[in-house]
Length: 345
Image 1 (cartoon, rainbow, N blue to C red):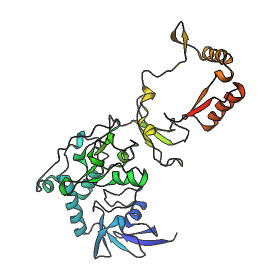
Image 2: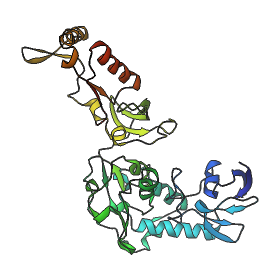
Image 3: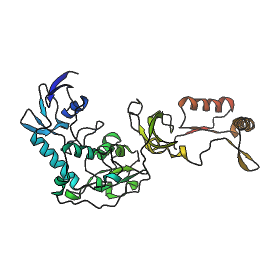
Image 4: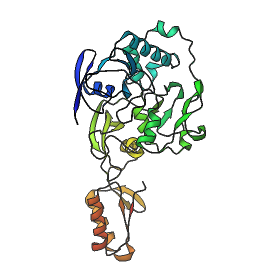
C-alpha cells in the first residue's frame, strides 16, 4: 500500500492511503482528543471532539477525513479549540461530578479530554446543569449500567453490532431523553445480551462498569482455561488473588476478545471450596488422600467396570490432544463407545 505525506501542526508525517487523519496522527504518536473513536470499530463521527482545520479553511472531524498527499492539518487553530472546548463543556455540564469515587477514575477518557482542552470550573458554571437521575441497572451479575454517566458515544452499541453481532442494545428515545437501551427498555439481564463484557472494556467513562472491580498490582500473561480454543488473557493479580481479566491483543486466536467465561469466570480460582487435594470416600465420608492412593482407587474401580458398564465424559476445558486420549482410552482400554463431550459449561 502506498503512503502519503501530510503535515499536522507543522510536523510532517507519513500515512498509508486509506487512513483517516486521526488514525495517521495516532500511528505517529500525535494526540487528537476524541471520545467516540475506537481502533476496533469503524469511525462514526458522533462526539465531534476530534475536529481539525484542513488546509487553513475547512473545519471537519478527523476520524472520517481521509488522508491525501500534501494535506495540511491544524489541531490547535483558535476556532478548532473553541468548538472542541464548547463540545466538551456541554458533556461535562450534564455529567456527575463524582470522579474520585468513580470506577473509571484515572482511566476515564472524558477526564483526559477535559484536561487536554482546558476545562475549568468557571467554564462549567456558566451552564445550567441538568444531571440525570436514572436508576442503575444492576441486573447483570457481572457489570452495572449507569445511564447518568453515559456520554452517548455509541461505542457500546457499535461493539455489540460490529464485533459481537448480538445487537442487544441501541439508541432509544429522542432529544435530551435519549439513552442507550435494550429492546423495550428492559433490564440488561432480560435482553439478548451474552455478558461478554466487550462493551464494558471499551466504554470511555463508567456508564458500563464491572462489579466489585479492583485495580491489580501486576498482570500475568496466560491462556484461558475454560475451553480448548486457547484465548490469550492477562490476569490482574493483587496479593495472592486474581481481581480481573483482560484479553490479550497480541494473541492470534482471540486478539483481545473474550467470552463471558473467560472475562468474568475467574472467581473459582480463589474460592474457599475449591479442591486442592484428592478426596476418597471412606465409610461414606470424603476424606483427603494422596495422589497415589486416589489413582490406585481409580485403577481398581475402572478394572471392575469395563465394557458397557463404563462411560466417559470428556471436557471442553482441556486440549484437543487430551480429549483424543480420553476417547482412545475409552474405546481401546475400557472397550466401549460410551463417550460424550460436554462443551456446555
